[in-house]
Image (cartoon, rainbow, N blue to C red):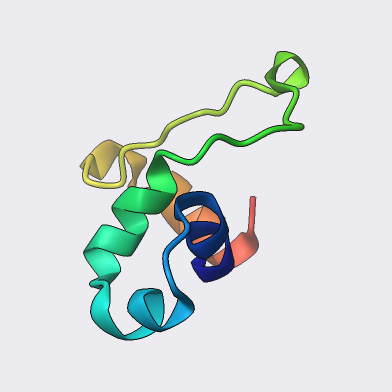
Length: 67
């Protein structure tokens, strides 16, 4: 992330390492374009709400069994 920020925005390395806050580094990195990811073959991901008591057993299974 640091090298990408230095290269993309032309910031000096010392500025990125010592003067730029972590939050700003993350925000600068969020606007950098990414290439080479083909999202057309991406599988649909299931979202499980861990705050829902009805999903308690499913969340425990994922944490302890990896499934």
